[in-house]
Length: 116
Image (cartoon, rainbow, N blue to C red):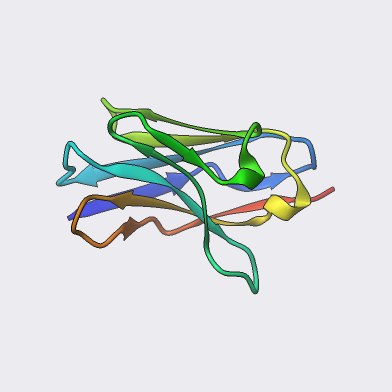
């Protein structure tokens, strides 16, 4: 079992920045993918960014150039640095942990609100 604890959400003005953190604990496999999805009210959950244990990154087109995903392998923590935030980035952001052949593990979600 793997547990994920997220932090770092909040209210920020348009153009501002936030950094989300997701700390994993438990039976963590060496080959995995961690990252973030988000879900805005009335919309489907969508992938924001992911990062494999082999350092392969994947970004949604709508965040390229603005968001950066990184990880501290020693701490089993993944970060999402979000710059140039827009009102349309407002959503609940969910961290995930994935390994081959297993269902994803999800964090509890953290609210990000971009508003003036």
